[in-house]
Length: 310
Ligand code: A3D
Image (tube, rainbow, N blue to C red; front, side, top):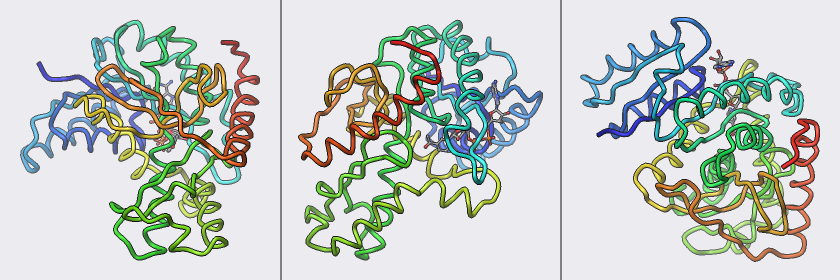
């Protein structure tokens, strides 16, 4: 039987993700949105690309959660995107309500699914999904680190004129201004970037990475990034569905790892058919640890506003 993936929210990130998934040709996909008819229209359009591109993925659009039943993976992209001048924090309460409602319905129809959260503010919304679902932490994962790391890798590759494939990096911490790009461990074909790029320039690239989402929001004028975010979710789904056991940075509910407790923070995790199969603890320097702690505190502030205690 083919795998089944549900994408909740048929907006920019959701529909671009469904397109990428359909083209993978390894699962049937259900696209849910509250807007009547819109997901059905997008699904039909994507279905009709199948004969041209050669995929058989069945893409269904719906406004009825019953159609999402028995999904192997559910991705939550529903919510309000960040507008210019709006901080991720502004979105908090609005999106908490949406993510709570969506999670209740997902759990009702797919009690064994793996949830990937994309809605911002990311770490806090992953917390909401974990809390409302009552799932073990292995089955609720936030997407942010793959994207933040991709941004860092893009800028490093451009700086040294290398292939993005040769650039390895990790960005840890919450998905926000306090994220922690680990420049010490960033390499180009195995060479530490400290041997290739001046320290001040690395700092500038780190800052541009931190502001990566805002830079695009400003340019677009309306809405936020979706090509790279959807590609980042796809990488996580690939690893889960194909049991590739890739180690990628993602938001995980930490229970003591990195000295942090009961909080979603971006760390490297191994993704396989069971969801999060292992959390990788990188040995950090004192300053990196302090930066991660600062980032975790920023996430904690949001979680405190949510009023969730677990
Ligand atoms: P957008 O194009 O507005 O799509 C959101 C969709 O959600 C719309 O089609 C809405 O109709 C739908 N929606 C609203 N409420 C509900 C509901 N209750 N049930 C089902 N669907 C609903 O936004 P987008 O696709 O650009 O972004 C979606 C979310 O992802 C936003 O919260 C973004 O901030 C977030 N995002 C996160 C990242 C990360 O790296 C974490 C990157 C990009 C976007």
